[in-house]
Image (cartoon, rainbow, N blue to C red; front, top):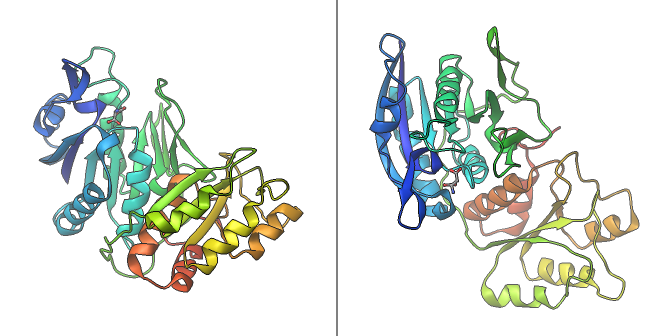
Length: 329
Ligand code: ASP
């Protein structure tokens, strides 16, 4: 019998119609009760740690979740976190950085339709999460629509479809077929003991470049107190310096100790800043290439790295390391 802790945080899975639309209302106990009799196979303890639409989940909530997992994991075979789908990929990435060295399963799941609705996908997704724990799929993952995705590779790609999450630039950790759950060999195995590193900086901006992005925008960042920027560049890695010179602004940010990481606007495949002149000139300004990290992973990793140290050189070093399977090597 597997001993599982379910941490419920809200989201559609736990929502009910309210005066102004769907709002989280169902307790963790009610969620697990809807699965029927799990006796003999799973012993599930439930702890409701918040009840929020995931749009309201931010640094404080990530820290609360990470601390709960860190303190409780020795007593369980695995932990399931029910969570809204909208920011689940950010939470899954951030927990992966905060809880390095994790060897037990910590599985996030949610649903597109509330548990109480007849058409719900919630039961299916929760059973998928239970199966991931039962199979011992270690580390932080997302269980959704019969797929288990490494947490730092998950991206929400659909607003309505049940296949709302994809595993970007990484194979699934597991998949459910008619013959059961197939678990694939892990491509990342952590070394070292489980550590809780839950300090983060919230002074990080994500900016998706568009043709004509006004360079003056970047002059504001030091004034507002930003310490890090993730730049979603064009294609394999480009930005404009003709008519509107963004390169000199990147250089200015670097000189002022603001760390800039650059990834691609394309969802799939790695960025590569060495192919084109526009990319090479960007690298010369001191930006850090994000390889094939998802935007969600790059943003949370920069927040996390800036929480570990004040020294931009150390942030750069941490950002470049593969910490939990977020970069292909
Ligand atoms: N707005 C909801 C949330 O992220 C959406 C969902 O859970 O699917 O909390």
